[in-house]
Image (cartoon, rainbow, N blue to C red; front, side, top):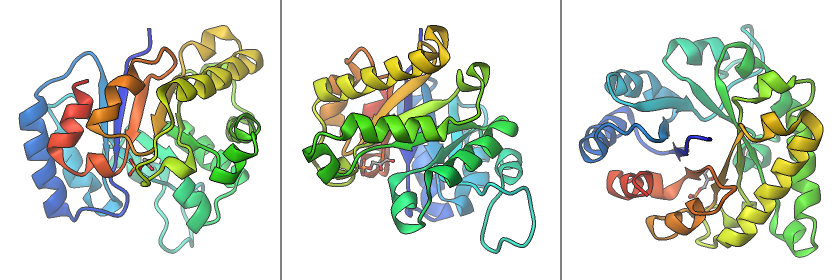
Length: 249
Ligand code: 13P
């Protein structure tokens, strides 16, 4: 059985003070949760202190990005080792906003996943199609290729712990949500593809999330789909009340 996983991606939001205020209120609402995994991904500046605040709770810490090199002259970058030491257990990799604004390619994303894996960080690998790709019937082709490229060179055993997040780009921050049935269909396709490449045992362990305009109102129907193991939440994760109600579904 796959444990449900709900992740907050705060993107470029929240100072340290705002992050800590969120954590205090969120923990007081949610308490200890044992039947699902909850992960907060603050901006880099707040990661360490949020992690300290979360100690003793069941909520885990993640980052929104990392660099694929260990160390060196890479001004502005953050390594896997730095994230691990700061308390992270997860890291989002290949978000469509990074692909778009920071020109991340499938090759760069694959290198980042390799670095994350080598430090025991669980990668949350984001894939998703653009509106025009969906309209021209290319969703499966696009997300299938992104998934295969992201997972290049990994063994089945390494993949078991990975998380894949299907985030249709046209659904991010737009209020437009993929229907639960369509989401289930796309994720089912990806899981079958994973099974054909790496075997059923791995495909049945990998967690697939949906992301894109998730709100308390639509989270129940999304999570009730057989293939949907969790949610990656942007805007609705910024308020403790709305994120807690999604986590409680
Ligand atoms: P929204 O929930 O704001 O649409 O963002 C989704 C997302 O990009 C999460 O990674």
